[in-house]
Image 1 (spheres, rainbow, N blue to C red):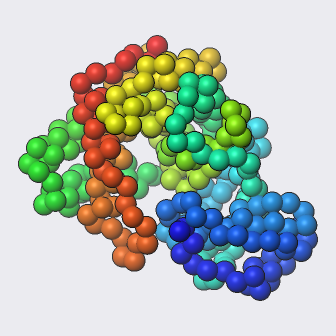
Image 2 (cartoon, rainbow, N blue to C red):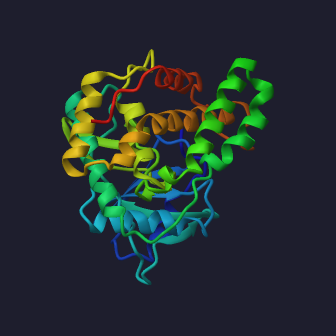
Length: 317
């Protein structure tokens, strides 16, 4: 259950007085999610999602909230933060930073088909174009600069082979990040977590993208690799499903054609995306934050994906 901090109806009614949304009609805790406390909130004026931030501090949140507003203003179907009468989106509720955003319809899907992947590819390309002029900057807390520390902390929990694998991927990607080829890759604020549960569908129609609270400033190619490593794979082996991968990439390229530098870097970035989530899941399993209230996801899933990417990567085009 992803309601770590409870909110009473009386508390919420008092908090909502700062908005021009009418009376509270209903509130319901949301079970999905692993980082924050989330609630569906219905008022006289509409349907919203309330988030109490359990990990991020108030000073960190403007990057994410302003990014969502920036994208929504450019036609991206994503939650749009609701401003109070003073023009502020961020407040405090039950002692936690809190924000209210518009609610999207639909639900995540567990077994995507090519038709779903096509819409995800198109959406991601549109998001990259829309974010190109977003001025906010946010370092990915689990980006490549974090990997050496994570590997050192995790080494005692891993086999020698796993440690060697992690170190090899870290060294390889560090060399690439220090190269002129890396600096040639287009970048901006990106979602960085575009997994199946963060895209909503109403039947076969895409409803929107949610959960921007892992967004960061990174390359568009990394963002694309993260999505492909989740939407386009056989879950058992980590190998790509050819039809889904082709469909997602074709839809992305129909909106935005990757550069020559991106095409060259595609195998490297797929491995980097797999390594990032493998290390993160290992860290969450073996070195959880104090009072973490959710079960960590299986890190072996991304180890399989990484090994599959090391063996073979289809070209981006």
